[in-house]
Length: 615
Image (cartoon, rainbow, N blue to C red; front, side, top):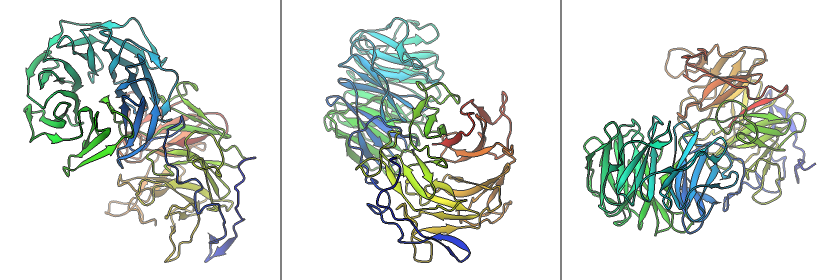
């Protein structure tokens, strides 16, 4: 039985000031706090991670790897081995799959964002694949085969190429899909043209659009009205009207432009100039350059914008670095990728991620990895474990080590076991860079575990709810250190306390701090002002929130998640395999029929004893 914590003494539990407190200093652990919490990803193995900050996936052409960067912290987390000479990158709209073209292997590798590892075997495509793009529905991947002058189409459900490849112009490089999903645009470097593919028929429509010399990168604005093509041989950018498919402007940029990206608002275009080692910025309204070009690293290729539109990331081929340019401050940070010749040709930054639905079942974990809201089997969805399984274990999830991803764990009578190495399987907490054990934190019969980023530092911390009182591990060491005036932890409340109350936690206001709340038979009481005490709910500024009715069925279990990728937690309930989510954020059930504001998902779960998990 590997779950028994090692080198732990039993903690004394005593009653103090009519509240149960955990005796300080009653635990001796191998290391203070979490075991193996010094986890550093030097090589990303296939392991279950979850959602958090947007990540940048940088292909390293001569290392045959992909570097992973947490764009919230600009920290390189590690590397994922892929095929030979990786070039192109495309992130699916849900941010759950990353597709990488391996030019030296004639394949596409699929990286699972939930695993931070390659999923399945490489997919054979045409000769020397370069650019890659995913349609808005996430069902098709389009690959520009530079060596065979064709486009391969991959069915994301099966992970296989469908139909024969589509002939286009000579040496296609860049590729992009219109936001409508109806058309694909392909930059033919050898033909100095752009081919347009009808996705319904899978065939090229109309004559190719003439552009400049050696067109390379392609990007489409969010409205789908403009197509931007870099012309590497003529040092300019072709701006194409998507309706007429005619070039309407040809602004000059730097020398040898390759990558191109559009900000989320569609107002700025960013061009990586490989020959002049700088970044040009174009005003989309006027098609004029804004200011002088910004120096970056040597010979930049790929460029992407973060989801908030506040930073631009440029992959510098001959500097082995990525330049992160802060658009608000005008500062440039160069990050060593750790790989040789970063390329990152395409859309390489994941979107702000929505929460992932999951089920804990007697030590096994099932997650909706394909994000379709229903169980699709262990191929499309994620199945992990064993992790837990002891009678009475309660599932928890959080970003325990601040890497930007949420990981699984279980709470067991005051002890916490968390999957620090992200592989979804319990491996013990006495092995370096493996899993984590902590406690005693909690342990009384009615204690319920809670987890959240109580301090806003990007790292989830543990806590327990005890009949209206909240004991939170504010210093994040995984141990109860008391909550007196000079003590590092905190006791909140009274907040809740009725017999049927169920604790919840979430970032109700979007300020980056987790706050407490309780669910009470369909009504939700949320600590909107974050002071940890119930202040009532009403129109007055600074009070708390009462939401509902949302739920109320005897079988309902409350769930909380960022359902719309807005950075704000919303409520929901799990009921026998069906998930009812407050998509419009008004805190009241509005129905999920066609045109209804809320969502009904499932079936996902439904086995008696299943417990919902949101990550």
